[in-house]
Image (cartoon, rainbow, N blue to C red; front, side):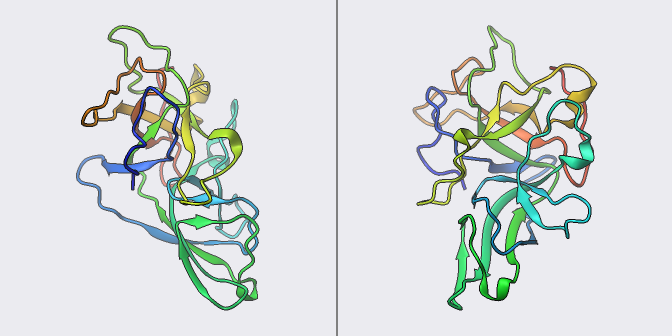
Length: 222
C-alpha cells in the first residue's frame, strides 16, 4: 500500500511500513483481526506498527512502543502493521477506515475490530529517519533497529497513512539488540527515475519484524 511519490531517499518523507513480500515466498497478504478498545487514545494509520497489550490486557491492539535498553523481549514485542479498522460509531453508522482517530468512542463502547498484517516473516519497506552512517560498499544488512513515529504526531489524518520510520539512532551493540524491533535485510529497489543507496540521507530499506509476538528476536550486528 505504498503511495506513489513517497519513495525519495534524498528527503525525509516517512510513509510507515509498506508490505513488500514474504520471506521465503510471495507475500501471502495474510491478515488477522484483533480488538481495539473503544476510546483508545492514540491515532493509528495504515502502515503503523502495533503491539499487543501486555499480559492481562485482554489481547487488545495498542500503539507501537519501542524497547529501550535491556527491556525484556516479551514486553515489547511487535504484532505487525495496521491495515484498517471497522467499528460502529456513536451515531450507529458502520465505519471502515485506514485510520483510527484518537479517542473515538464506539457504539455501546464495544471494541473496534482492527485488521493487522501479522505474519512474522512479512518483509516491509520503510524509510530511515536519517543516514545509516555508511560509506563505500558498507551495508546495514543484519543490523537491528527500532521504529519511530516521526515527530510523534501520528498518521496523516487526511489520508490515514502512517508516518513511521526506521530510527537510525536506536541501534545498540551487544546482547540487548536481540530485543530491537526491526532487522534490515536489504535495500529497497530503486524506483524508475529515482535513486536509493545505502549512503543516501534517508535510505529506503527492507526489514522484517525482529522481535515479533509470534517469534523471538535474533542478534543484529550493530
